[in-house]
Length: 260
Image (cartoon, rainbow, N blue to C red):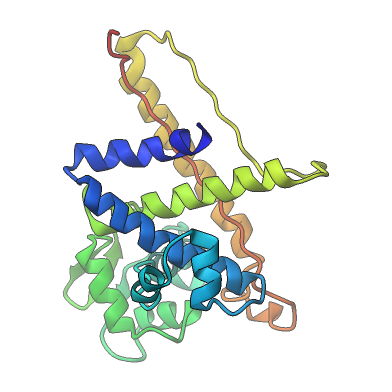
């Protein structure tokens, strides 16, 4: 029963987009092997065929052909989000009024290159600029660029949308597991739901706009706070131990209930 409840949202998504049972089964098997391998690695164990077969219940030959499949998840979106956050909060890249400034992007010594290098040295600034322009996050004007959005939101039905969806579901699952498995709940992970189910329908657009504005303001404040403790953004924290991760995911659904 628990598995059925957990799988139902994914099945609804798959059926509404025309995926068939064979595609779902293949995806399930691939995911089983991938996650089992990650769990073994987390425990310091070698993710070999025998252990993966024992964990997943799949035959060794099934495990073998799925062990080397590439992981489609990427840190690309996280890096771009950090770059946008840096653009919004670093005084070097702000106007006198505290807004993201237009940045020159030509050359290795450009303002945009400096912005990217302040977050990561692993990516070429031109590559980052191409991706941000492709996602309509920036507007080019001559040799300068302007930030289009205050938050990084993916387009509907894009690969980025699905990556966000997958990431957010994984974060929610990890939060729930942490709270369920924790014997001492002195400091549980945040998990809050607020639902009202008899709202005046003519007020729904107003409510949706209010939630979007308040949500964006909250995350802007949150990014300003968290950026103070991120080693990538603060060279003065170089000697401190890093690799701590904080994720806060917000969502809302405002709609009119269908008659049953």
